[in-house]
Length: 148
Image (cartoon, rainbow, N blue to C red; front, side):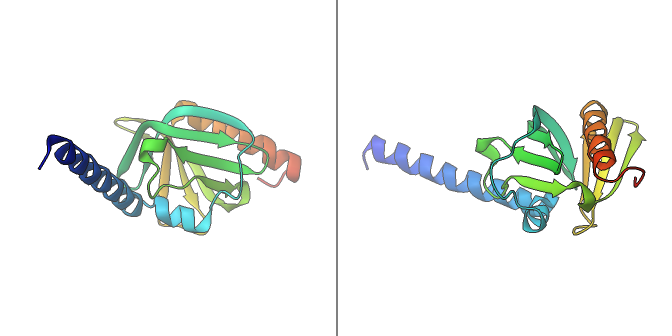
């Protein structure tokens, strides 16, 4: 077998393995569950925070997530190499069942739970969590004063 064919086969095998691994992580962390309930319907327009980290379930997405907000809701997308099984998400503000700041020994987080997927927990680092919470509060206040 020529060396070029071996290299091509090895690259193809790695690509298949990588896609399977990333897809499996999406199922195990809960990303696929959120994607089922909250798919992004089109392009996202709003404030974006790139290269963020978040915890979802047992998984840690370190520095590969874009977190966005606009008047309608919250947006999550992972970088292209980690996209298999991780379609972009858009969660309307009224679908966030709870949002509270929690302090653990390893840091402070904004912990989110969702109405349609109550078993999935998303934790955002405190710094970006405060920005998200401020945008959510502005959106809720503009929609119905005094509701939240």
